[in-house]
Amino acid sequence: MKNPDTEQPRPGAAILRTALRRNVGAMIAGTVLMGLYQAAETAFPIALGLIVEHTMQDRSLGSLAISIGSLAVIITTVSLSWRFGMRVLQKANTTEAHRWRVRVAACGLQPVARDVDLRSGEILTIATEDADQTADIIEVVPLLISSLVAVAVAAVALGLADLRLGLLVIVGTVAILSVLAVMSKRIGASTKEQQARVARAGAKVADLIIGLRPLHGFGGNHAAFGSYRRVSTDAKRQAITVARVNGVYAGTALALNAVLAAAVSLTAGWLAFEGRITIGELVMAVGLAQFIMEPLKMFSEMPKYVMIARASAERMALVLTAPPVTTPGPERPEPGGELAVVGVRHGTLQGATFTVTAGEFVAVAAYQPRAAADLAAVLAVNVAPHAYEGVVRVGGREIAELSIESVREHLLVNPYDGEIFAGTLRTNIDPSGTGRTIEAAVEASMLTDVVALHREGLDYAIRDRGANLSGGQRQRLSLARALAADADVLVLHDPTTAVDAVTEQLIARNVVKLRKGRTTLVLTSSPALLDAADRVLVLDEGVITAEDTHRNLLAGDEAYCRAVAR
Image 1 (tube, helix red, strand yellow):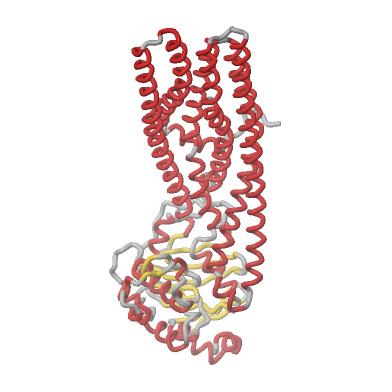
Image 2: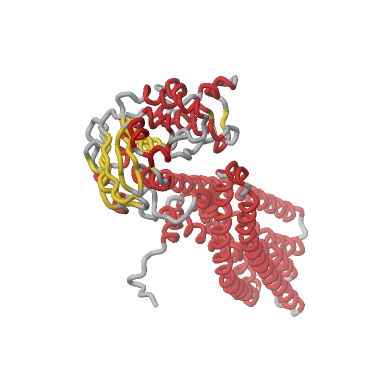
């Protein structure tokens, strides 16, 4: 059993408290207006009872006119208070959901990744559905309080007619909420699991969309579809479970509310039959028994929404409270653009050591593709410096000592599977909008044919993940973006695997020309890029085993010749 003094606060609860705290003003205004709405609605049957009572006694047109005027005031109050109360609450709800969406997105887009075991599709679900459901707490609390106002007004009015009627409403309400509070816990747990399974299905869809072309290429689309079908079926089953639990909850709430209303009506009828309450009080009691159904229904549904909001807040906390995978230092690289890798051991790398001097164009021929991927991950700081042995230096300083912003400014690693975003060719090449080197980057990457093919040119619309481009066009677009960034140190990982040999030759020549005087490292097995490099490093079994020009290695190294000759 946990000690209350040492138990850590739940991050989901902290998120809900933050949401409530910064919307206090809107919630107070909404509570007042919705409380006025519920009080006016409850006042309607009370007014009807009083009208019957006084009309039967006075039998005058003046009393009738006053009664009609009173009902008009009550109806107007009901209409306006609901309209403006819900406007205030929904505006606050929407604004709060926006804030949490932005926070989750900001965490996902930070330069330093967070140590969270979630895929992009799951984070997307958290940033949308969970953010919206967490913000619902802004409406839940005022509606809960306003429903309590309606129940309290009804209990007082009935208690004034006969104490037993008031006590019946109070005891019945407490009993209903006690039963539903227990049931709402099951809803919260089921909803949390459903959200997790839906998120996993969304992540699977994202993965399938990315790999759709390769899947069709080697005939794996049917197996992939079967994998998604299983994940989606799990989500469907859990959704059915949640719907079943919600149905039982709603049915139970409705039945209990109806039982309470019937009990109030029958008790009032019995009291009227006994002569202990008047006909007007009987009309009031029967009307309240009918009108109290709505606030009781709303009141009984609130625990369910609270549990759903808590479950969503807990899932958001998985992202918001996750620690960064590394803590960057405060330093900046020295000018010059030198890149040094010293004794790096990570994955298949077994102590790789080499240096690329400032302004040099160097190629790495990795005999094992996995080694090239591991090296690219280390250089891109996708692997925390403390997670591997050895050091990487940029501009004479270790990466662990540098701020992540300065690393991104000086060192750009362009992966072989660079992401393409929905937008235009221009916004994909130059996301920052500076426009300084777009034309040169387009020409160097041989993307000119794509630009010339479309009337819109660089403003040609690109679909999500480059769905309307071929594999070679996507790769050249990614290369153009990397070249347009004009980083001091540029690392390219297999930038020409999806283009033909002639285009590859032209790209190699253009990249060397464009990057002249800038530090460039290319991880590739392309003969064209290897031949264009100042020198070639051979990466075999995780270490650098040879170093020379491409042509000298071809002439004197049989293993190199077998690995790269086409």
